[in-house]
Image (cartoon, rainbow, N blue to C red; front, top):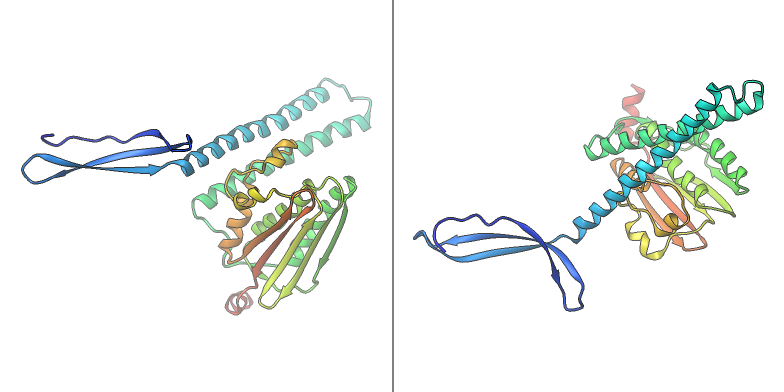
Length: 291
């Protein structure tokens, strides 16, 4: 081959010996020996399986989020029209019920919008509240009562044991609230019957939080992917449990940004236990907020 020639990249599937195909990206480059002639070519084959999986999960996410948005919007519109048409004008209990549905679906929309904004910040590397102090006892006082009521409505036993004098941790109250609420809410959602237990204790220089449920559990093969973006376990999909596949991803990213960590133990059909470790605030940070 003579002269310089571009070798564009192109994608194709390479078939393996077991008849499985692997998506690859092929790119090439020429080696010129200095005489204006090309006598060698180098081809690079890049495995695209992980990229394709991320694309698939992204597509599933957009499909799910469109569905999740469409349902509450349609419900809000329907009940608003019923009220405007006077369907409950002489029936205060019915009007209150209609308004309750509108309020609940509006909260659902607001939650999804907040989740999208938080995801955008995480993707942009914006970590909020690293130099703030959060009182875990105050967060639990806000989080637990409504979720306990929700569990009670499902007939689930809800128990908690929160050490009363937990030291503050570094991080914004809003993000710490999101992390704890997400885990406990998931436990309630994925527990058709049985119990949910929340425990938070000081363990040396970290606060250890356990959220344990007797719910549907997580398949063993799903656990390695549990904290990936857009990932949803097949058991949740099959049971029609709504979700975007972002909650646990955001929990893990949020914890790691504050120096924390999360682990999961689960057995399908028997329940799940999430363990969160959050470092207590440093002496220097405490002094800065005291001065």
